[in-house]
Image (cartoon, rainbow over all chains, first blue to last red; front, side):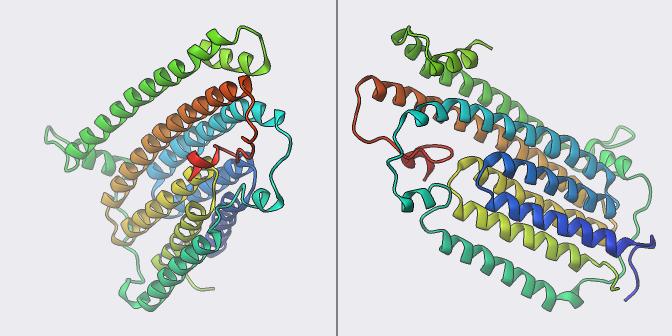
Length: 218
Length: 117
């Protein structure tokens, strides 16, 4: 086997990043509190961005950091905070009436062994297929030529007046983002219509009421 | 130490995919299910970029960017749905608090049983 990449320390860096990614993703799946899961997801996404850098894909690594590690994780943290505000207040008024079994099933589905077995079986079959078909993949990777970002931009937008190969896909992606924005706005409007009659019926300023006002007012 | 080849990256991506599938199938909290879906999409991205590196062709990276865009918009819409559902839960809970009913305990981490499953 010939080394595909010349820099030294590459295997150590790869195993560190891969271990970080796998450990972080395991934590995402196993942690009870969603906040811990979100922070583990952040670690995982940053490790994957490092793997992209090792694969000589700096543009994808930048997109990964800017879009996934910052925007999506912040979105998840935001929704965790918001749902705690919305849901935990009525929960505290309840007496703890659930049994031990219910408590164990609060975080995991009732059929979690089946799900775990399915995931492990999928992983085992993937790994088996990859290791068996190892000879199919060429050992030496083709070295990239030219600027990575320029190549991607050429494929997306084209050059010298010619449209790029993926210009239609780019337009569809932008349309998808537009539809997403409109959909999010409509969802916010519908949730406001859910809360608005509630405020009218409950003039008494309770903790819930304060939280709802905070949500509807901004 | 063995040099790092494409298969190494593919094994890492397969591990991420398997862990993500396990998370989607086992967890009940909808936020964590969404995070597991992000893990799955990241595994796909890692595969795409690894193959792009293998062939020295940036088209795989273009596809990875498209997958990222789709994942981001999916996360936004799913989070919006979650917030709308949570508002509905709050409205129902307030209605139930007004006329006390015997049993509406056990809200799981995200949503009550009917909505989370």
